[in-house]
Length: 306
Ligand code: AR6
Ligand code: MG
Image 1 (cartoon, helix red, strand yellow):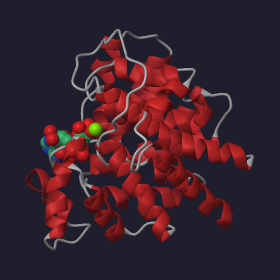
Image 2: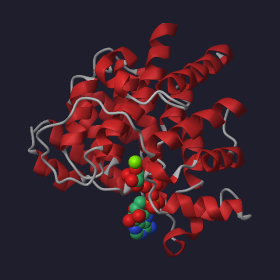
Image 3: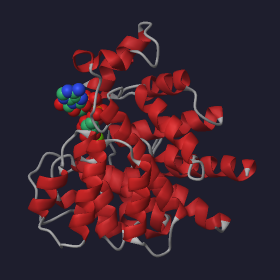
């Protein structure tokens, strides 16, 4: 693959997360079948704030360092960005002495979180390890562990990371069957295997949005949103179509659109994100230009080591 294409895909995935998140945030919690979506939006939410933390930590350490990533999340934490209840509790526990990889196990009566919070921030891991599935598996799971220790939370993040990596490796034409088969070959968990089988059925049947939501989900649980994002990408022919469709399903729109944007941006590249959407994204401290810079740095590290 040409260097410039790879760079565009890295930037596309990180900026795609932010653009999808900011646009989807305006419609969070609405019922399925939204008919009118405003083009572009400015303020991103926790999804992007944490994605930035993942990228910053990978760059600073030239790879994964769990303790450093946990403290980067804590340093960046801004409650006004709309976090789920889990991560802020974990941040408090780590700040008062819990180990970075143990604190999250205390959530939800000791079961850990299966929310989509680890998957929504995973794009930099999918990019950084796009050509190393073993390392991707390890880092996706360990980075999830910081806040999401439930098996389904971690496996959801892993599936999303692998979808980003596959999107980087494929193109310019999408072979839907091949893409799905590769995901199926990678996933070990039965819950996610079943969801991928549903996607296979849905792409040949032009389903209603109601049926998509009923069968794949549109909630905050990783298993009710990661497969949905993958479906939004697979069924569409452009970044724009995929993200608008994700938002139109309602529910956890910011996160489903963020994850759809991460995969779609990794596939189509940054040029595929409409200028109007990119230009509306906040660009003050740690905004659009900063996210582009992070993606470029991730790419440069990979270029210099290959
Ligand atoms: N048992 C029951 N419910 C659970 C469990 C569990 N083991 N784990 C998660 N939930 P959380 P996130 C439910 O708090 O994943 C933001 O808006 C529970 O209802 O770990 O980081 C983001 O933008 C819990 O409140 O946060 C995303 O849209 C919810 O899942 C979303 O929140 C979220 O889990 C994800 O946040
Ligand atoms: Mg959010």
